[in-house]
Image 1 (cartoon, helix red, strand yellow):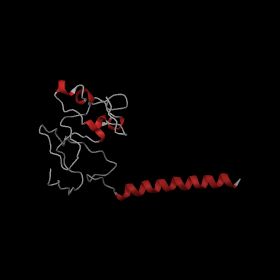
Image 2: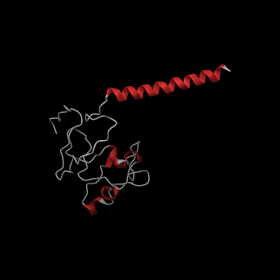
Image 3: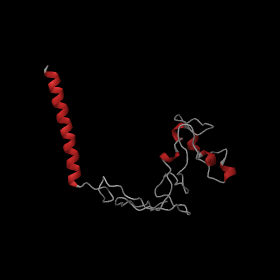
Image 4: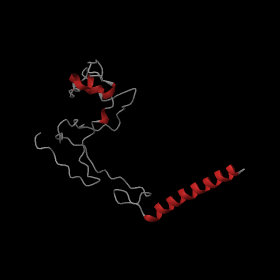
Length: 146
């Protein structure tokens, strides 16, 4: 008989704790990195434009940046739209840079005819280049020996 009472008391305590935390957050005025209240939606300005000129790499072995938009590209387990132009079988016809041979090596270093599964999701390393403002202060300095 005491177990249901204890369980009920714990449930009430948990509910009150969560309500208290929510109330404390709303009262304290927590702000996002952009300085607005976290519960208020911000209208997103069009703050970046794709660059026509390719950006330089900022450090050795930085993955190349993508100089075009990939907003509507399908990259999932079934399809990778990047390979339509950048796979070695298509790149010459499309005038696109070919993938590095490292993208065709499996975990054991064996050469494959298709892109390795470990390199399938291009946007895991490669991102579209954009001249976007910093969200937080950045003191990064490029390497001097490019």
